[in-house]
Length: 298
Image 1: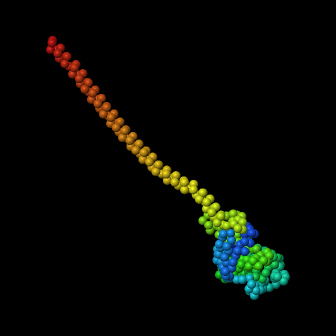
Image 2: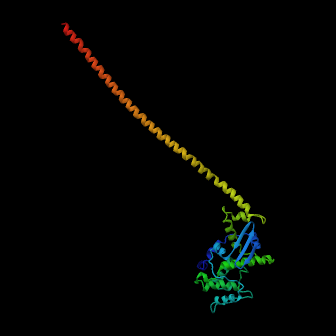
Image 3: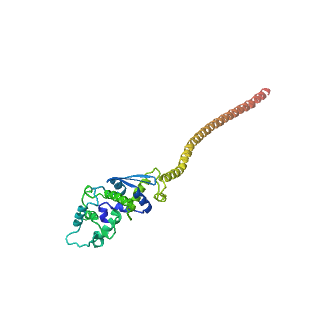
């Protein structure tokens, strides 16, 4: 939606994929408010610290001005400011009927009810929700630091849900998608990231350490072949070097042998020539001596 994109809310809405009712309820029952801007949660072996800054980080919602839904005067002021002169709408004792809002604000308010406030009936827009609608309609061009902090509101809303749930009030489990984001962020902080599906399948008495140990053992098993391969590579390297040295030595020996063979052949040819010359000389000497003798006899 273009309006949500302009105020940098769309990434948060896109992140809200999937949830688990049991995990959400356990999370809220374990949530303890320390101050308006700090809460802790310990369940299933997880230990979490919640602040507006942390929620802004995991949701990618911009930080802004702290605000509370119980600021009734500001809510009434925002409601009056939202409607231009002459624009009609329908009210009941709790708020304004959503379907009476002009387009696109009837749809925008529905998305706020679904993704941001997560409270009340989808058919009614409450006073404090008009603070968000008014900001979207009339103040979307304000700098971030002058806008209402959705991260601050979400933390306040989680604290309120947790308090009412412990008081025994029905239907107080909300912000399922946000809780999933918080838990997943914690699971991914482990050296070996843990899966949401494995976590949600734990029993109430289950502990994240079990998953961490299983993940650690499977990870070491997966890394073992890599280490083995590195060792095998390191072993092959010297062998290859030895083979290279042997090959060079064999080439050198072959060259030396060739040189010896050539020299031997040359020496043999020289010897043959010498012997042949000597035979020719002896033959010539033998034929001359008898002829001289025969002349003398005559």
